[in-house]
Image 1: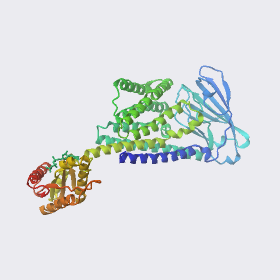
Image 2 (image 1 turned 30 degrees about the vertical axis):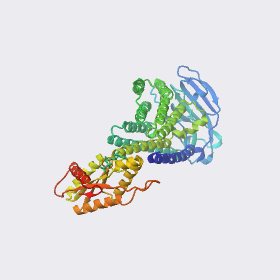
Image 3 (image 1 turned 30 degrees about the horizontal axis):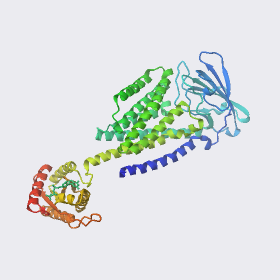
Image 4 (image 1 turned 180 degrees about the vertical axis):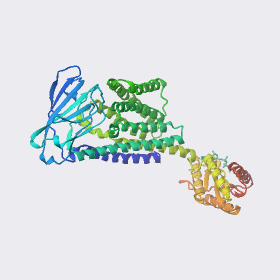
Length: 561
Ligand SMILES: Nc1nc2c(ncn2[C@@H]2O[C@H](COP(=O)(O)OP(=O)(O)OP(=O)(O)O)[C@@H](O)[C@H]2O)c(=O)[nH]1
């Protein structure tokens, strides 16, 4: 595995450790029971329903509070959850708050007959407050204190177009301070997630600008922007923004489609898969139609669309991605395994999210919701970003440096030489440019083998580089030819430098495993610039080449200047 891959693997491993420690912390703090005292609500709740079209009311008792469909099937209308509780006198001076985890519907909450809060709106101005948890302060003046006086809690829910009610568990009552702390913490986490997504998007935008043929940077950047906005739709900031909640809800659903589309484009682009148009065009058309339809479709029907997209993700896209991973690993594409495992973690999280959303998991598994916590997703996105950046860096490196000797490639050398010549001319200094050609190298290759030849090329590069200063230039000009450029004081200084390089290459043998040590000889042809006359890189290289060719004919193994 290349060094970069190993480094990323270590980072990945560390991140996963970090995530799991955070997940544990997250799960603990997500359960307010473990931190401060909670006022127990009765386990038994009465649930009454009234269908939109019918007048009669039906009631059942729930042993532990749950979704409406646990007690009544296919319900559409107003459901009323009722329970009672006592509050000890010691709470008289403590502000208390009722916290309801994620509720799909609009709701109104009554304490001892008084409306204490509502989210969303009931018809006729229906607004669906589906994405948010609720917290309602319980006014002390409305509470009855003492262990023998009961308080009545009623939660009216407008359940419409989808099963719901108190499907995420029972509400809790705690000190307002605790609930606020908790909400600030989770809102802070969301905002951190949004910030990280936007930073990643900016980084990807930068890399895309530097290398426009790499569309994966573009798609991943756009994906992160869409993800940031998607997460914002869940924030309390959106809830309190005054925007119509149905509009935020629709935006959330549209973004879900957009994210699916961008993820598909990113995956096919990263794994360089030319997906058949028979697959791609209908798929992208469907996703586009989904996004447009989510804006205009009647809000009652929107969940049918969502279910369609969820089915497409589970039955078509996830198998397709697994097929991509399989092919990439089989073809040994760069980063295939690492990318596949990171993306697989992300896909599992999304798949899990879909199952939680459809409420088809046993309740205890829902506890694992930390899997889709922002910390987990941020870690995945950071790993993806590192992989993309490393891929870009390798691309840049391979375009700039010679793979075998680690010297500049010819084109990169000429580019840097041009810059250096401008600088040298402005400061009226002198530069020496020299070509180094190994003597009888073909013979070495033929007599030993190419691996020995490669070792010699590497050794020559290292020795030359050691003889130069950090800011001098060293490049590989061709097969067994190297090129250097260095600032010198005058021609004599240049000659001394080239002799020093010559000695450092030839004085010691190159050790050749258990075979005998090999001495190499090299011919060097160099020119110096005139501080008063500007010269181009091409002119200088041509002159040095002339001197080298003539030098090789005249006397090999020497410095000619
Ligand atoms: N091992 C190895 N050989 C290479 C590499 N690139 C080029 N060569 C070989 O380097 C040799 C260059 O030979 P020439 O420049 O023609 O001549 P020479 O044998 O060095 O002879 P003179 O330069 O006239 O002394 C060829 O045999 C190439 O196959 C490489 O990356 N690794």
